Amino acid sequence: MPFNEIIAMAFSNLWRRKMRTLLTVAAVVIGATLVALMASLGTGLKGFIVGQFGQTFPEDAIIVSSGRDINVFQGGGRPQEISSIETVVILPFTAADLEKLRAIPGVERVDYLVSVSARYIQPQGSSKIYTVNVDGVPEYEAAIRPLFLGSHITEGDAGQCLIAYDYLTTFGWPDDESVIGRQVTVSVGKQLAYETETHDYTFTIKGVIDKKISTAELLITQSDAIEMARFYQSNPLRYSEQQPGFTVQLKAAALTDVKAIAAAVKAEGWNALTSDDILAEINSVFNVIQVGLSAFGIIALVVAAIGIINTLLMAIHERTREIGVMKAVGATRGTIRLMFTAEGAALGFLGGAAGGVLALLTGQALNVIGARTFLSDFPGFQLSSFTWWLIPGVIALTTVIALLAGLYPANRAARLDPVEALRYE
Image (cartoon, rainbow, N blue to C red; front, side, top):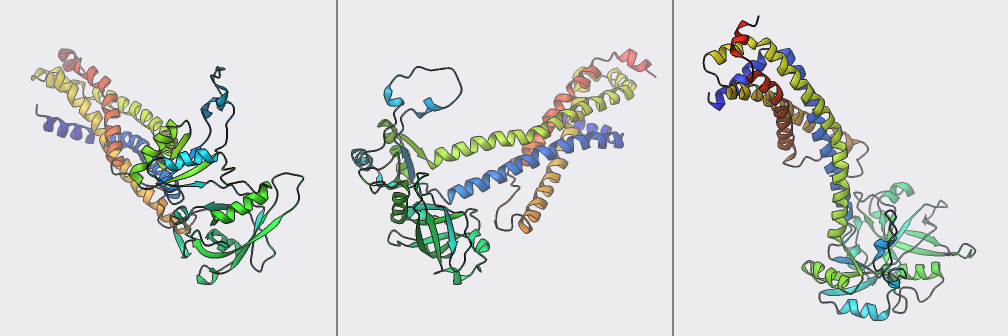
């Protein structure tokens, strides 16, 4: 019997028991919808995180740490022998180390990674104070921040800043050009608990970071950040050639140099972290999340597979005499087996297709609702994101699961004795 006739017969036989078929397909639809929808939510969330990261960390930057073999400090596992005292004592960079880094082919510049701890931020004309994350970055890193208003800060813009869009709402300021030129004051204390001295630093707003970047960030020049950090740590030599610290950031002259620079850094015994490394970590985390979310759908599909087995066994019971007639007129075991396997696969295909469409519609509805409510501050962000292969993949998954579920009933039908089947009442 030609394969297309077997497929046509499979759909025809399923349609003979419409209600039973619809209920069985409904179970597959639930599983397929959950798998597709959960995977799309994971993809959407990952896209949001990756998008946020891509707008805050330059692709041509490499973070370099002086720590050697830092994995020895990670918890878990059995005690391990320490092979070198250098793995225990992590030394900060020296001026000579900075020269080595600058001499690596492809390195355009070396910058300090400045850590600033601020007490609070206070807007101009207000007595209220708010939390703040102060970040002093090189000019090329500030330049990748998308702006809602104003312009980027450069290395010569001491006393100027970029402020997160969320602060406009928090301060009660309008989101128009009138905020450019306003001032904010940042208060910095001392690192040691018993030093109570504080200092206020006033900055003029030069730009507002785009609303798509969710943060409580105040972006300032590295020179301003270094001044604040030195006060905080009571150390006038901090972030200088004499005391560079444990971590610095390199800028590659070209994106094609990043991997070679990272390899050269590691060859010197230091640790290097690139944007690709960070993205790989993000992807690995979200892959686990997506599997976890999709597990609910897989469980539903397993339940649906049991339903498919039951449906086909009932069909065999009802069509025992029909199977006997088919065998009597020459149908082989392979033909009978293929016919019932095709019915199982058809149930999976129909359920997967319907579930995929339902998941797509639900995902789009979530995107519309989110854009008008809790995601209104993030225009363009898709809560549910469907990759091109997701729906075909779900249909293939449900079809394969249903096909496997149909093997046992199909083998049982193929083994029926034709004489006994013809006598069946």
